[in-house]
Length: 203
Image 1: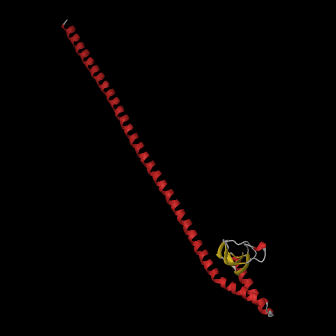
Image 2 (image 1 turned 90 degrees about the horizontal axis):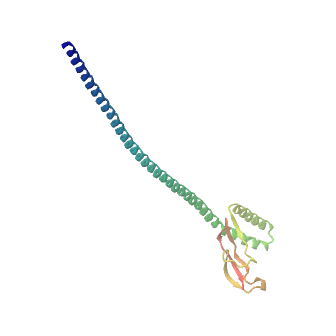
Image 3 (image 1 turned 30 degrees about the vertical axis):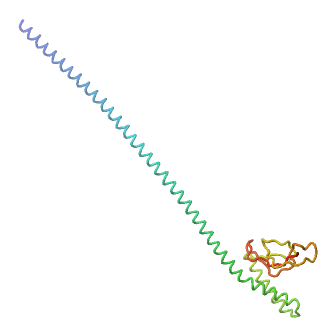
C-alpha cells in the first residue's frame, strides 16, 4: 500500500513538474511571440522613419537639381545674349570702319565727276576716256561693298535722301517740288544714307 502511495506521489510530482514545465514553455512561447511582434512593430516604425528620411532627401535633391537646372538655363541664356551682342558689335565695328573708309573716298568720286564734266567740253579724248575709266573702276569696286548713288535729278524732293541747298523757280509746272539740279551727289551704303544728295528744289 505504501508503495502505491509512493508511486501516486511520484506520479503527482511528475504531473506537477510537467504542468509547470508546460506552463513555463507556454509562458516562454508567449513571451517569444510578444517579442517577435514588438520587433516587427519596431522594424515597421524604423522602416517608416527611413522611408520618411529618404523621401525628404529625395525632395531636397529634386529641389536642388531643379535650382541647378534653372541656374544653368539662365547662364546659357546670358551667354547666348553676350555672344550675340559681341557678334553684332564686331559686325557694327567692321561696317563702321568700312563706312568711314568709303566716306573718305567720296571726295575722290566728286572730283572724278567734276573732271568728267569739264572734259566733256574738251577735245582731249584720251583724258576724257582715262578719267571715265578710273571713275568707273572705282565706282564698280565700291558698289561691291554696298555703295549706291542716290538718283535725285527729276525726282520728288525727299528729306530721307535729299538735302535742299536752295529753291529755284521751277522751269515747268510739273517740276514744282522736284529736284531741278544736283549740287553734290548723295550715296547710300547697304541701304543706309552715307551722304545726303545736296539739291536745288523747284518752287
